Image 1 (cartoon, rainbow, N blue to C red):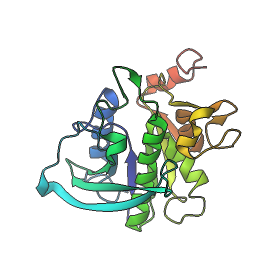
Image 2: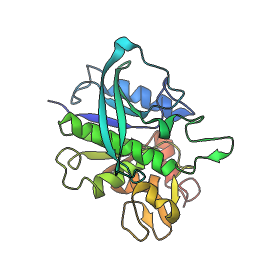
Image 3: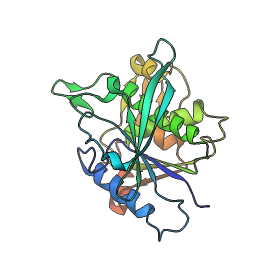
Image 4: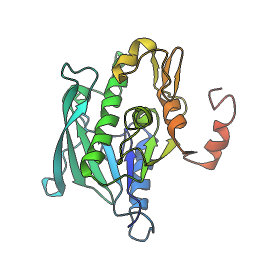
Length: 242
């Protein structure tokens, strides 16, 4: 049996796109899931938030739905109901994370007033739901492939919340850097959105807050970029943000 691979990405063509991230995620998922690729067990799972603008999938392509009680630091009961809709997409298995309070909004990351103030909560809940969906599947994940800062909370949760989990903790983690200009910075005042406290030792955390991109980098066993040129640029002070 080959590797079970899961992508966590905030964009994927043709479902949700603001830039090149969506194109890369779609192409890579299809390439890894191709029958001729040895070592990968069937289609890649691509977890994507079900934003307002995501097209409704063809009913014939829907493989199933899973209702989850996902740990949520904002919920009075400690968890929120999240539905994960599984869709047979073109060359991969799309898994839409559906929670309208988080994703039924005008934009993916913000609106005309700017970035949403609760983006840490939104993408933290998305990442937690993806990990819970993998747990519900029952079969250990072999590789969690994170894409950019929006997937960074998965690194925090794997190390802090799933340290003894037989499905999530053994999974290797890859972090792909698509755009180093965006880090997903969360100051100390925003840490409760992730269930964290100031002064902690989460991946990506420092005395001022948490850098979600750094969290993914710190938790990952392998860090890569979308091209050799970008990898070289990322190692310079100017392009690598210090």
